[in-house]
Structures are given as C-alpha cells and as structure tokens.
Image 1 (cartoon, rainbow, N blue to C red):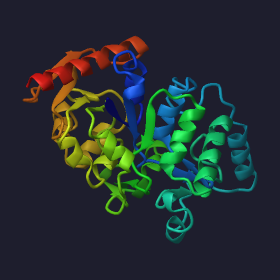
Image 2 (tube, one colour):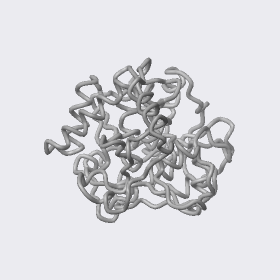
Image 3 (cartoon, one colour):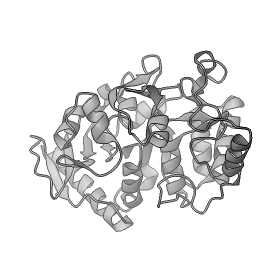
Length: 332
C-alpha cells in the first residue's frame, strides 16, 4: 500500500510511471483542493482533474491542463458575448457576501463566468457540470471524485484532501488573489507577501485521507506551498506524516525549480527557494529523491537519479528511485 500527495503537474507526471513500480490497486492519491475554483457556478478541481484526466488517458499533456483535443466553443462564445456587450475582460471575483453564500464547498473561490479567465473545454465543462450537480444532489466531494474516477476508469483510488472548503489566497502588492487568478490570469507576475489557506482552521481532512496517510507516503515534485501546503494546513495531516514513512521528490535542482511559481511562493512564505528549503518545509520527510545534479546535503537519506520527467520511462525511473528511498528508510 502506498499514498501519493498530488498537486500541480509534478506528481501526475510521476504517477505515469509509478504503476510499473507500485500496484495501482494498492495506491491512493490524495488530491489538493486548495486551488479549486467555482467559475460560472461550476466547481473546478484543477489538481484532482489532472490526475483524473491523466489516469483516464485523456489529459492534454502539452498544457497539462484539460482534455486532449477538446473543443472550446462555449468559452469562445462567452468571450464574444462579453466583448459585444462591452463587459470588462479578466477575472471577475464575486463580492464578499456572495463568496460565503450558497454552496459551502465553493466559498472564498467564487468567480463570475463572464468572459471566463480560465479556458474550459467543452468536454472538460461536462465534468465540472456533473461534479457540481452531484454535489448539489447531496453527495460529498469524496463520493463525487470516486464516481468520476470510475467514469474515467482510474486504476488508483483518487480522493480529495477534504470535503470542506480551503482556498489558497495569495497576498500580493496588488491585493489578495485566489491562486488561480494569480497563476492563470496574472501569470504569477505580482510580488507576493504571503500565502493564506483560508478556511483550513475549520476544515477537516477526510477519513479516507487520514486512513491513506497510515500507509507509506510519497510527496511528489509538486509546489510545496500551494500544492502540498493546503494539505499540511489541515489538522492531523502533518501529525500523520510524522508517524509513517515519507519519501519526497524535490521539485528543485539545488536552487533551480523545474516549473511553476514555487520559488517565488516559497520565498514569500519564509523558505529558501531550493531543495534545502523544501527539506525545511517537509520536516516529516524521512528520505528524499534528488536529481543527479543536486549536491544539497540534507542530513537525511537521499537517492539520486535524473528527476526530469518527459516520458513514461522517465517517470518510471523516478518511481524506482522512490522505492529505493523507502528501502533506505527501512534500513535506517
């Protein structure tokens, strides 16, 4: 049995090769929901959906977002209508009262669908429509995620970290922004002062998540702040990680990050933007997988390999290094 903590693109890439090393039937994937967003009334779970679509063999792996060869007619028409009506383009965050009204799971992350700032494909939209409708029928996000996993033929058990709302809010020099606004609309350009996981103090990790954390855990090469941070903000998660073997794959090669805004966000939250900073952020990690070119001394067991993952063979190589690192922990 093994559990992967998944966010962004790093861990889904790793999962592509992990099935050759870890039995999918004995694998649980806990998805980050801190960067979920409600757009035009539909709940979108980007990190969960990347695993869902990749496991279902339909992910657009050029963008690592959405469904391959999806059409975008609805998105295009939304922008045409907004332009014709003279409506301002860009993220349209709803007012404070609306943020906490209605569907509880969407609070603090609710945007208008006018000229939607995230390009949602037509098949992709059908997934969000199904998810939102099943939630409105009274199902939990965990139940809905497993239902969608069945629909996409997932071989692993994919569960969200919580059935409660947690919103990753980036505090910038231009004001507060939901992470998706910061990353998708603003391209991570604003200066960052801090990152807040709004609602985490009241949210609960699901029983499915806490149960999965009793198995050995792999923290994939995801953004430590906005992909893994929301999970760690939940009561009981870090405590559980302290009690089980944990191997983390660094998303850095010394001080060079593979992709995304991890370096900027780590510095804003008080961590060095480097492999050493990742180790500081993960005190519960018993061992690390580092790139061959990473000479960081972590004073913890490390296994080194080429951690760049451009193919399934690359991902399998990294997954084997993870398994080797677990053996180092057992020996220690």
